[in-house]
Picture: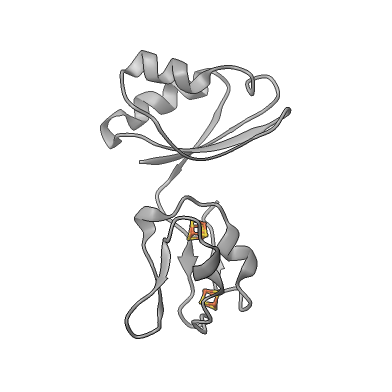
Length: 128
Ligand code: SF4
Ligand code: SF4
């Protein structure tokens, strides 16, 4: 499961992920991170069976946790298959199929939002 973590200046310097790993004994995969001096946002992936446990430990440390059940969404009626989102996606979650139509692979999406910003027809959106 993918979990989006947001934290403020109080918790940004704490080793919150290391603590969660040690306490749960599960591996945490960091898919994306943006951490500044005052706030941070990290997208992690954890085993579905351990997700609730990890979530609870992080919340106790003051981290806001959001379960990301959906990837970026595409409005098929708005998409003109221009490919702008294909070239900017860092994980190849958006690609052309054999018929030059743009398709999404939700598993690969790391919710960075880059495609949403470049889409000329506003066909793309993120759930959070
Ligand atoms: S940028 Fe927008 S219109 Fe262009 S292919 Fe992607 S979703 Fe479709
Ligand atoms: S949100 Fe980021 S990772 Fe997901 S499809 Fe768009 S560009 Fe790719």
